[in-house]
Length: 289
Ligand code: PAF
Image (cartoon, rainbow, N blue to C red; front, top):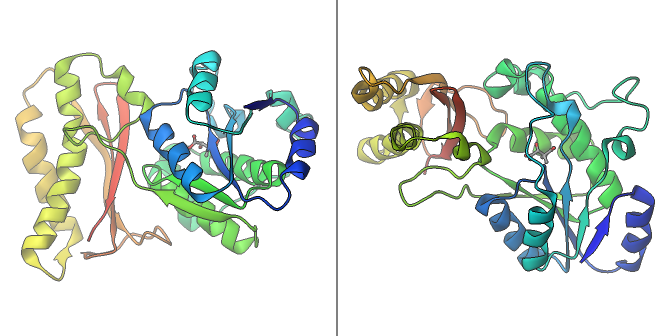
């Protein structure tokens, strides 16, 4: 497995892969089973698999602790090696942003896609994500790039960017991995310390699965707001008098491509949720069938 820390070193190897298909899995490291599924999927769709590991300062807000973000380098490299990754691109921030954060040309996704949901609570976040992803595409020159559906807003914004800017990379979404109780895999799950917090975290998927079940029972469509409000109340009721607090930050139904809210639950609509379990912020979503 190659380990590249500079653009120039990577590029010379990229020339040697001429004629082969290259898949990129962009990550910020701290690889877990969800990332490993993306890497395995990449392995099945291309000749060469490149994983980028870069904790992107541009997508962290002033209140978010960039310095505290985990960087288990040796463990991540061992995971990549074990999965048969061909190359890891592991740049230093000074390689990615030699002029620092200013002045910098940035990608500004449409406000209509960033002003709601995660974007509303993390100003500038998706601008930082879109900018680094476009840079990674320019550096790595992949034919395909694999992104998890867990970060559905990120995925929709990247799909829109590649479409609008004619970026010659096929975006391959990969379904969210869940544990046996339905909890979506995430690096943040490690912050759920007690069994009660772990139990409370299941509220997110219970609400989503409840929406899917309600739609299946109703057939056709259902009013989104009433249905989601009712499910939220029912799932959260047992936690009201508990020492573990569960606070929903947003719960909404959207068009999966434009990310605009929709009034009806129906097949093809994506339901999104973000909630705090004590201090731990979790997100999840599901595409209704
Ligand atoms: O999803 C992530 O880990 C990051 O947002 C990404 C796509 C690697 C960009 O830094």
